[in-house]
Image 1: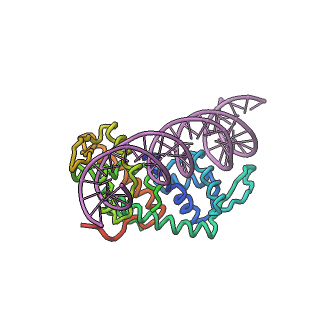
Image 2: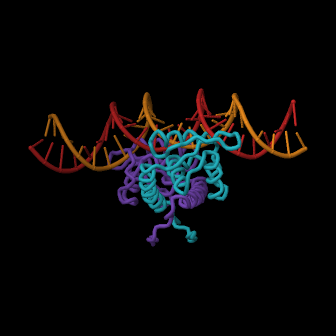
Image 3: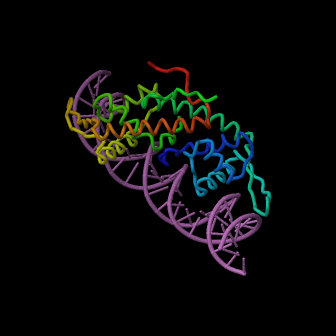
Length: 113
Length: 113
DNA sequence: CCTTCATACGTAGCAAGCCTACTTGTCCGC
DNA sequence: GCGGACAAGTAGGCTTGCTACGTATGAAGG
């Protein structure tokens, strides 16, 4: 997938992943890769700064912990983050509907459960 | 709509508009606005450079003409542009399916005729 | 013991892309 | 004459994601 396509949607993706439960950065990367079927394989240099950005914005909160001698920074969605995610979702729907109107075939037949 | 969201998809949009017939820049802006229901109201500073970019890439070709004393640069899709559009469409489908999997509600019920 | 790999975090600098603001010029109505 | 719609364009800035690099631990293999 063209990498640049993500522009402006990464934050929404991260919030959506964290919506299902708190995760640390490395696990977020793996979750994105797994849930996208390998399509989204994002480098740490993309994820970590994005998470700091989200934290500065107050959309996620982080806690440090040590697991097996390894430092982990676990992020969880805040209330503001939940609201932001709702907005991002609405924005995505409008965006995808709009672009889909031009590019056609917006709706793939397979509606995943 | 958040403008930044367009990042990386503007080219596809422009090619899609031109697929239906040659238009000049100003008319392209109006076509985008009309077909998107007002959602896509892009400034000239966005459209004109993008069209030059597409022309440099060989995806569109332009012809000057004068209508009512006003200079018009009319753009039309080239063969390469048509192929590029097909690729963009496929890319868009993958992208929207992927992001939609995270943001949910990828497929709006209304399939326009 | 030492190397390598997976886990885990992070920064610095770069490139791309779109927007804001501004400029030029014609035609039409007042 | 002046303002507004039409029509094209450039310059500079800002955001964003990527590449490349750096640091550290634990487990496995030679």
